[in-house]
Length: 123
Image (tube, rainbow, N blue to C red; front, side, top):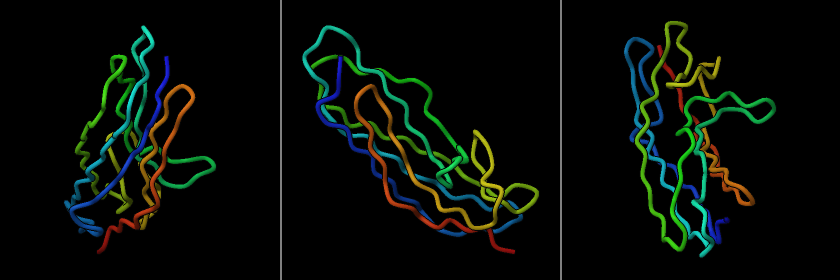
């Protein structure tokens, strides 16, 4: 029950949005290979801001992939400016106007993380 390879990548359609109704779309991609074990391989993908403690803006919830598979999954996640003009997502707020957003994929025994993208709410 393991991943042989696991990689996450992240892109945005824009890096800034208006405080009043602004939105951007993040494209999160998970690629990898699962081993030939008998069990499904669980993982979760996150969009986060900050590191300790991280602000979770979105998570995929637990996902599973069958054994001996080449994995290439894509997720589109909408982020927006909340009523305080802070970068926000379906799971919470960054609590700041400019967030350093990164993707993080986590499974048993493997994880992958992207670099940061500065996403800004502008007045």
